[in-house]
Length: 349
Image 1: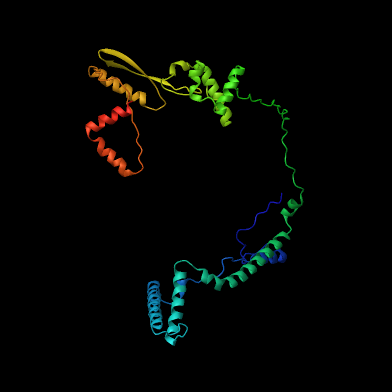
Image 2: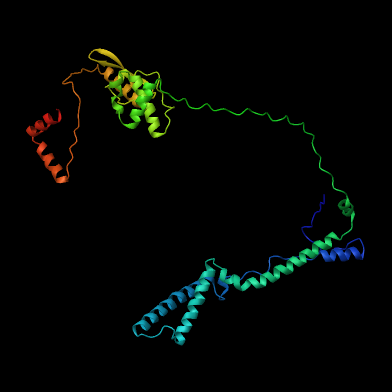
């Protein structure tokens, strides 16, 4: 490995070298100082030999005053229909002053790309000379013969390779076989005919329970018909393990399966002198907890008493009109209690 240490500072030429005139000549060559900094870049504030605040005030005033003067002259030329390219000596001086003050303000606020065009050529020449001197200095350093020269000619030391134990062969895993989704096939040819009739539209899907008399069989046929009509699989929706007779005409029509919903317990609820535990099937967070706090508040206050006024079902009929005016007329018509009772009898038939 070629390891050398470059001198950070060149030796002083005033010190005597004890190795003879040849070594003194080499030290004299290596004592060249390469200055890469170059001359200082001129700043915008060096435009006038005045204090900085005074120079800024002069150029700011000059910029805005000549800009106002040129705009005023431009407006006068437009009024008198004078060509804009016809300028007087004062206008030429104003234009030159505007450009000079504009360049000064650009350089003062840190935008020195205008000055870079002026100083770039000289800086490039200085950089080329400095690079040549630096390369010449490195070549002279390489020609030196001394105690370190023998170290350079030594063959490189081969890197030490640590002996590692051989790796065991990679285990070959068998390919993973994914089981296909189970498909529910019709149990008989009769079911197949019913499925084809439902798909064709000859048998309504909602009438399967009444025609077959078996709610589970009706759900299975409806499920298979839906899969064939949509081309989508319902394998992730459970079908077995549910009593479809219990929901007939109660809470869900045309079932094709069921989903599992967590059931929470709220209570005890003290109602009419008896304690009740209220099961709640929900996926809404904090619903059971808030109901349970209400049950505790009712229990702590001595319980609740219930009164049954009427057993019925709330219905919300919808009436459609061609215009909003007709809908408003119906609204005013129903504000009369006698008219409301008349419409109630009609809608409840």
